[in-house]
Amino acid sequence: MALARRRASPGAAFDCSDGRGRYYAPVPIAPDGDILERLLARDESTFRSVIETHGTSVLGIARRVLADPNLAEEVAQDTFVALWRRPGAFDPERGSLRSFLLVVARNKAVDLVRREEARKRATDSLLQEAGSASDTAADDERIEDREEIRKALSQLSLVQREAIVLAYFGGRTYREVARELKIPEGTAKTRLRDGLVRLRTLLGASEESAGWN
Image (cartoon, rainbow, N blue to C red; front, side, top):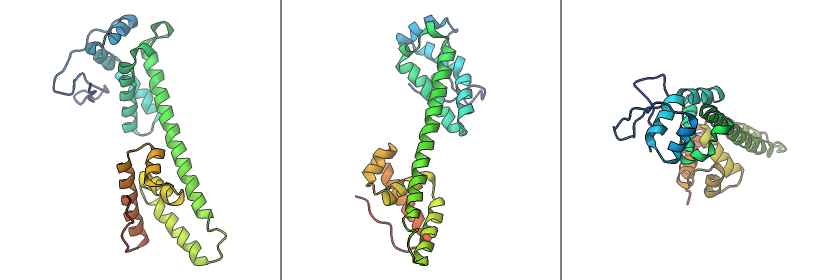
């Protein structure tokens, strides 16, 4: 089921479209226990009513945790998708549906922040290791080359930089890069190739980027 973002009314996060041009009027909000029963029965109109009722609040708490509004919208949508997939995770006896959704959204947003921070720390650590590897070199030219590489790496996009650092300074294959970053292998290859082209342009190199098999 598609969850489309509302465009006619910017005050809400989602609309009640099924993604194929058909719109459903939200049903009147019911007691949480009744809502749970309807969700367990896969009642789509009730699900859309839940989105209409709580969408703005869920998006709001995600935005308070995440600086990126696009990521906040993804978290909000993931929260409702999780409710649709596992409505039994909500227990009306332990609290309201609104409170449950806000907790889920906040946890998802915090987990996303932690993953991004961990990824950034890993990339920074590899960059530091790459830089310190030639600290003992007596050749000033090698040290200068290292600084040029570090400067060029800093100008790449984050996704390109982390892939290149993992592959070239971390010794990973592109398949290992894909597994570590939890991305498709094709995406890893693209990031590495695009990053290499950009890196060599920044370094003024004329040779073509190496192939990835």
